[in-house]
Image (cartoon, rainbow, N blue to C red):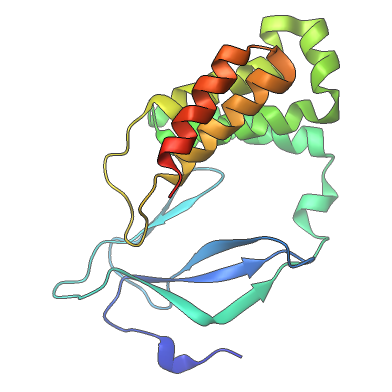
Length: 196
């Protein structure tokens, strides 16, 4: 049950947990509970909420521990054919990359969407399309993301999680699909060094 006493009027935004329907995974969701001048949503998909600091605030972000939302199947994600959803996301992410060249978050999600697009046909698609396959495109984006060093980590984070996961996903693609074991070992080694 949500405890309103957790709300902090002196922070710019709160986060809360969204838990998958089977309870095996969770992600943090941003929440603004009042209007703050300058607050805006960035990106066309996989949005991020940017909020300026409030003068004199002690904490920019506060995690709400009593508010947990459980996600259930159905709705938007299940209405579309998955392939068309990933193709649309890739189009939107490419537009974001034009607006924000080299943006780490956009590069990461381009890798993710290309890998999702390949799905369980990744091996066949790689064999038939080679360098034009979604798997190879995913690897390129994950590698590009992995090479970017963090400019600054969000409050409460010790590791650049997207960079860490980009290394792991690139290693997986190199080992499982491309059969480039040197690449896989290199990416896993970098990820291992980052693992807290």
